[in-house]
Length: 209
Image (cartoon, rainbow, N blue to C red; front, side, top):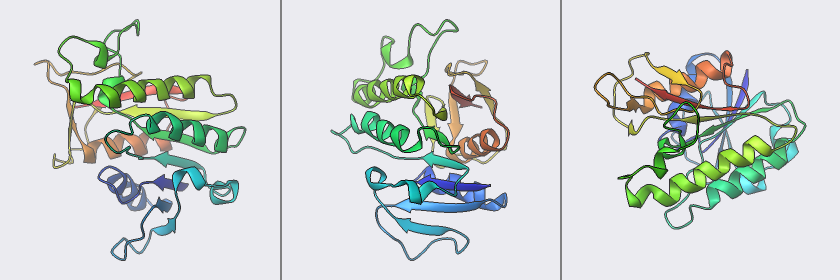
């Protein structure tokens, strides 16, 4: 498959990119700043998310957004998704978005999101609120094929690549001890598995160990 990754050199984006390359996919990385040190199998394109044009994505099967908004500019999570939804409207390219745990639901009825629960860290509230709003943008966007992939509460940059995870339709997952965690490496595996064999089309997806 031909996969584009926005933010291909970021913490999560680089792991998704590596997983895709190692599975034999053709990957194009869209980055703001070019780097000399990158996998030679990766095609690098210097481009801002908001400046992407139809010609940039016309040969792709999938576009992954690993965009991360700077602190204080959390509303960009909404505007970035709005921009991508407009770009991909009525096109065969599927959009997968790297989300956050705070936008996941805590109940099967999907009435309460994690960031709305008592004790949720105040410092993460703006990010989670706007990420939740971005899922609503996706849900209402016409002519769009998408999946919004949220990690567990603890998203571990240096965690092991175990190859094991569980998934749900946007509901925060916890183990038998009540802990919700996943490594970024295993999150990347879950993302590529969903790309190759979709189970959560036009839906949120949450993953955890």
